[in-house]
Length: 381
Image (tube, rainbow, N blue to C red; front, side):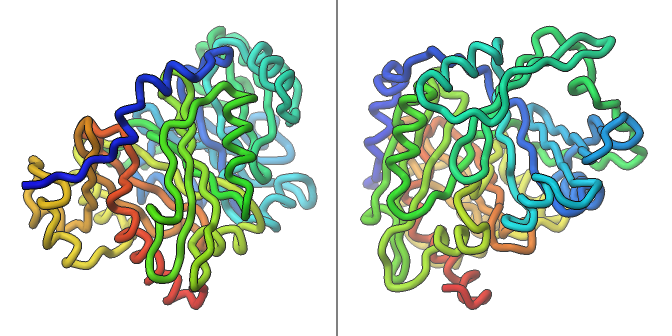
């Protein structure tokens, strides 16, 4: 049986070596979403995705202009933030973008050094390093601007033992549903405008020392109607991976164009979260009410010819709509949610890697056709 491989993963070790590690990153510290109603959105992520209550900041903790709920599931932390007063930057962000990712916070050993290293290489400052303290120690933060209104926040919590950071208290909640088996953030995808992909690829290479892991052009990622281009950037230890998408010419409006129209600019398109058992995770998420993209049964007709032998039964994959792809180091299983807010912007990917280091190139056509069906229903294709 012939198996098709993604040769791009062969370069993985070489490309990791190319990444200059002047900016050591330990992982993703948290992702902060600005939303219209933080209390209700936090409840959604608990109920629908199995996140647990961790910390809270608001009027009761001395926060006068905003409220934030911190949710946790294994190594994933989401911060859900809403404004408490009219005007100001959070309301401006919401009016323009709707609910979406504002801050991608990266865990570092030295937030001051991370700021100096990146701004000296051309990054635009979002805010200078500062420290906040309480009886549990201190956390140092700094921030740089990236695509659209997205900010990378550098977080040094090496001298802090509290629940999240100063200004937050433990969020006690009687309601804590079972988790869904989500482990960590595998990657986060940014959508940028026409001709901007290489600009941001260069930004991550020059400013943050990332290397290009793989690239896809419109020949790789296209259907009868739409197309896009993508390049994946990774830091030196491979813990942070940022694919960057831009539209490509097609007969109709692509999902990237739809995103940019509704988000009013560049931003985080989706968050890929890893699981060790995608069957159990997807079953639980569906029971919790998460909606996934539909893949036609015909996708599975020649699956084994495309990906070779796998551990899972085709019928079990088909029942759940899970996609499979293989590279030279193994295979992966993935499934994509529908947008999680009213605007067709942010969504989540559930991914289980069985050796594969790639991003599902063989599934792009099926995935984008599924998205096009949703676009057609919305009248935006």
